[in-house]
Image 1 (cartoon, rainbow, N blue to C red):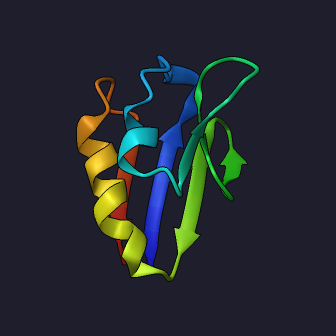
Image 2: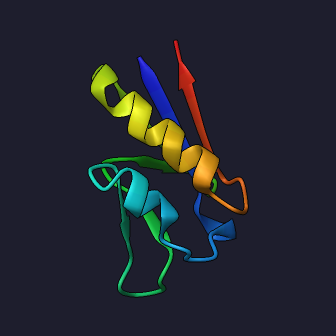
Length: 76
């Protein structure tokens, strides 16, 4: 299982996550912040749980590229 978490409230809208993992992230037209596609929101933490390990590499690149370190990626 791959677990990706985004602290959306702290997003600065740099777009790096979208560039690294466009299948998992997109930018909101409303507020210019990142959106983690198909995630659930719990108290500002948007979480995506996927059994598709093909997303792992791109999500890890997004995690490393984020200048405010609000993306975490874990394997379980």
